[in-house]
Length: 182
Ligand code: THU
Image (tube, rainbow, N blue to C red):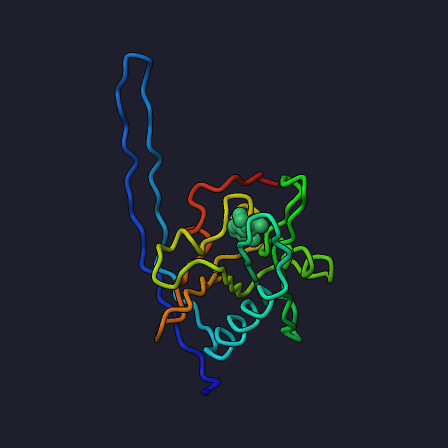
C-alpha cells in the first residue's frame, strides 16, 4: 500500500444557538462552530490500526456481556509510532469493567505519551448495523477528549465489505465535552 498521506476533510459546522422562551425562564440550545478541518493521514496507519483493534478484540474478557471490543492507537507525541492496544475487561461487579478504548489510552499514557494521533475501535456489532453499535461510550469519549487534539482522528471499524468504517474527530464525537480551563 502507498505510504503517501491522504487528506481527510471534515466539513465546517455552523449551528447557531437556539433560544426557547418558557414560563420558567429562557433555555438555550448552545450553538456549535467548527472550522473545516484538513487532516493528513497515512492510509497504512488506518489499516494497521484497524487490524490491530480487531486483534485486540479477540483478547477481550467479556464473560458477562459477550460483547468483545478492541482498540488500537498511536500517539502524536511518540516518534516511534508504536501501537497501543486495549480490549474490554469486565468484572463480576460490572461497574469495575473497563472499556477497550480507555484500556488502550491508559497504556499509552502510562508509557509517557499524552496526545492521540489515531485511534481505531473494533466491536462485535454487526457490520450492517447502526454506527451506535461501534462508537465509544460516553465515558470513553470524555477520556478520548482528555488526550485528543484538533487533528486526532477516530476510526470506527464496521467490518463491512469494501468499507473500513466511520471516521470522526473529537469535536464531532463529543460535542460540548466537559473541559476545565487550566
Ligand atoms: N464497551 C467498550 O469496550 N467500549 C465502549 O465504548 C462501549 C462498551 C464494552 C464494555 C462492556 O464490556 C461491553 O462493551 C458491553 O457494554
